[in-house]
Image: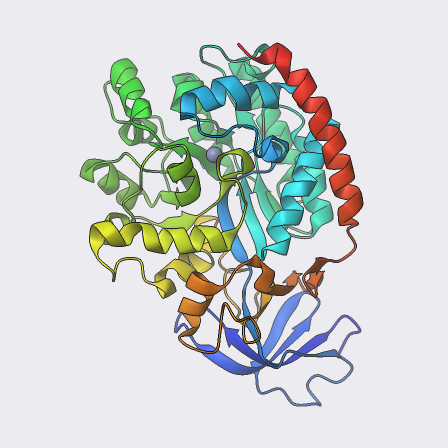
Length: 448
Ligand SMILES: [Zn+2]
């Protein structure tokens, strides 16, 4: 057994495998991979570093399929607004003001928060420029991410730095794909990220659809978050937002559409037939008053679904526990108490997210041969989570990020005793305050 082996003993392991087994026992990790689960003999684990996890619960690292690491410095600066005012008055001026340095700090703060909360894989939408800074921050962080530069070649009142030429947008996306897809030992992948139909020309979206098919590269966009997007595509193209995205080649098994609040049955059929994933972002949808996505209907139609926190300014956390609890509770007044039970929501936040990103052979569940992307929870000594009860309910309804004691990604320990390993959090937040100050000052000139 190599020196990099780890023997985690006496845990309760929520595997999220096909049989949804919960195993009382040990985990053996070597070279970043899970080698054995259950009863492990001393001979098998000889030479491995031993950690006792008695009284702890191990779950797969969370997979969040809609994040904007670029927006973290704008947290608590864009509240209580409608989506379009929020974009024009705050988010676009802020993104226009970002430099490579301030974007890097934004990404590092976002990643720190995600990791402390047990998220080990994300689908991120960047801003228009400086996307390499996000790739570098993710590479350093240790987690898995699909990253993508935001593409915008159309729109009113868009600050000049964000308004791209169609060719430039596609060219830069392809350069980033070449640079980052498969980087950091395969932890980083690329995903084309046109912002939404309102910000993109039809030509851009068609070219993204073609490039995605040619390169087998995922697509990440926003769709049907507000009724305005349907009104827009109906006016210009005579189709609902989802039908339009289908028409221009943006749907498919490699596509993830954030939100999906304002859809009808025909839209659901398109999504199901094309295997397009809807990423549910409940906090963001409530805070921007966009509405509530009908998740039981997606399940009925067989539409693939996932979960995400969206960006810090519209949430204002990047916390999988908050999103899980809301995803479950939100549906119940409309569809009854059995809608979106805790075990279904836990799937959304783990294996369903991995499936949406096409990485379910690597992560999303705790299984032999998969990457050791694990979260260790301490529930038993927390008065808010005990004394016992059904495990999925404890995780989805009671647990909070302070219950995360350890996090491993590709076998590397990123959190120990609830603290980031190898990151000086105090220093990071001091840099973040400085970067925040700089960006807030610079963004004034981009507010229209
Ligand atoms: Zn978003």
